[in-house]
Image (cartoon, rainbow, N blue to C red; front, side, top):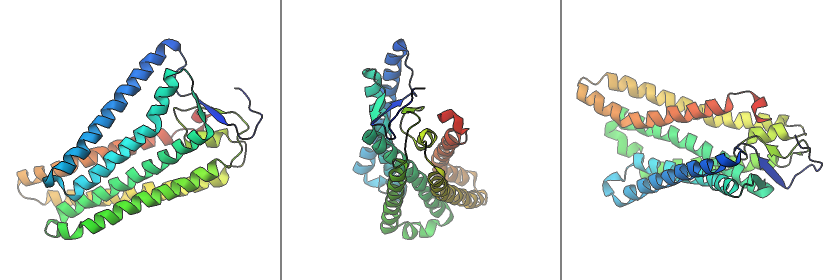
Length: 267
């Protein structure tokens, strides 16, 4: 691996994509198709919710937030991957890397909190149907959403600031598709103990609190549904939670598959 003499390289090389020439066009069109589908689907959902008065409910309000997160999340990484693949250049500037890492952390954590808020929304809808509109009023929905975005963006800014204060004298090669915290901690030749502790604490607070809120909400939801006498009523109640539960399982499954693996895979 090429050694870098300076402690803070101005550019980093992303090693996540294949450098085999004939695979470059395939990678480009695969990522382009995924990006177009992601953008189109989420934009369509936002437009449909905005133009349909019947969809002006808390659940669809949170779905719009998830769509915005998905659009921003994809736009943070995929365009850079497309450019690097097209021009056969896998490098990225220090500033570009910091911006990419900031939005990746912030949006990922925000999505986690929004999913937890949606679980509480489903709890209120099924377990407290008579008081649902009183509980999930517009003020509460807006306050929860603004708080989730604000907390996660401030938290992300703090982590990225301290990550890029570390010296990077081992190498400027990043073993990933994009600039991500674990890969940079492995690259640093400085003491990363405090950075890692801070990441574990903040990730633990956000992820575990969101996870337990979701689990507790669904325990109450399932127990309430099982007490419904009619099979049609139970089926209708389950259908209102099925899509959200699927997204939650996919989200946490992806997170665990990405981060619960040996640190050596990033080096």
